Image 1 (cartoon, rainbow, N blue to C red):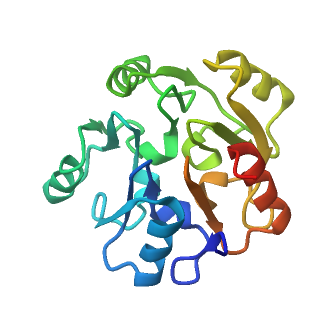
Image 2 (cartoon, one colour; image 1 turned 90 degrees about the vertical axis):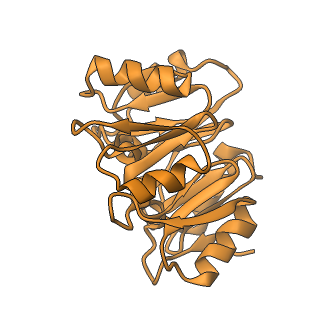
Image 3 (cartoon, rainbow, N blue to C red; image 1 turned 135 degrees about the vertical axis):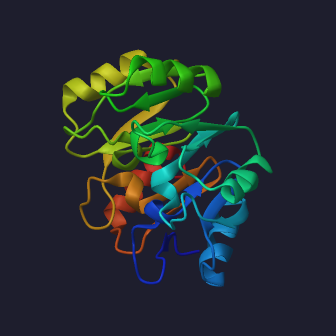
Length: 222
């Protein structure tokens, strides 16, 4: 299977969809081929919804196996949809774009370095993870700058050695893979062009063969 995908010609698939281990949330009325490829490549149930009335689900939703973190401005019907599949934590007006300011798996959550300590504590307790405030390549929007699973994390190619070293020293396991790369012909906003879980991945359709190789290496798909 070709491991690349677009949504109506847009390679920024991570902006519009959010993937978990068993679920993927995609915009309402997404093309059938878009939904089918996500379901097959990542072995997930695909759920159509909006978040905050918007199709940019990847920017506004995140979480792990213990629950979802979403913008507190979502509609009641959208909240009902999420609650059909798990517990939901709603963020207040400060940094409420959860998919933009949180990078998380089942062990840790890297968050925007300017996030308040109260919000950090709330996220850590809800997801039951260690919270690490950081930025990479000078960008605090870690949810769109990076991508991670329970096996590895892909950081932007412009991340500094100091940033990489700091993250590695705070991770819970030496077996966790940390690497750098890009998507969509050199974009350092990895999360905007990558959907990944432990079972597979899909990258934006302008991602090069070299970039695909880095994704496969870091997340253990080789």
